[in-house]
Length: 159
Image 1 (spheres, rainbow, N blue to C red):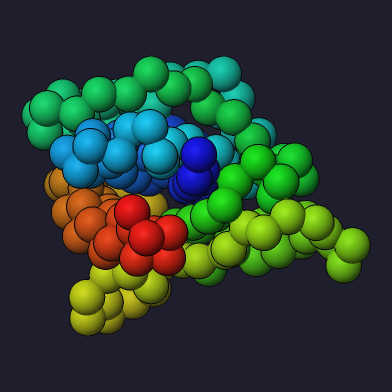
Image 2: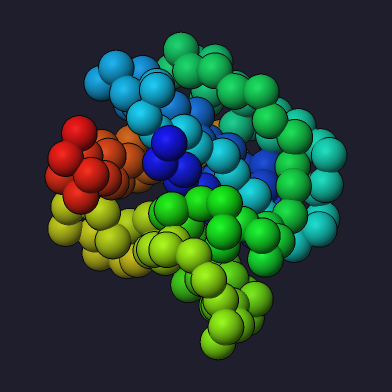
């Protein structure tokens, strides 16, 4: 099983939305038995909480599904996941702080928007302090990036 982890700050907005979108893409490709995804946050702000109401609204509007409670990124995630996808450079820096020189595992660490065609910024904007439109924007970003990420994984693993 190829495991993908999406990481943002609080694990209630961007990363659970990316998880829901990516899971749908996996299902559409018939790769449920080959690829799985999850999400986490670099902070402990929302441990055990469901995604933000606005995230859930977008998930419902787009016909997606998620059963997720906020969790924090931990060192063991380096061993458990093949791909760790950070939503922005701050999250990436926080993840790198947990890496250690003796780290074992074959994970690959990326920014989500590295997989977006013609991204003008490598950071997925955090919609938490804004309105509903920010969550729709994040959906569109993670949808395009997620499609390209899935293509990348399929090519890497000859799926």
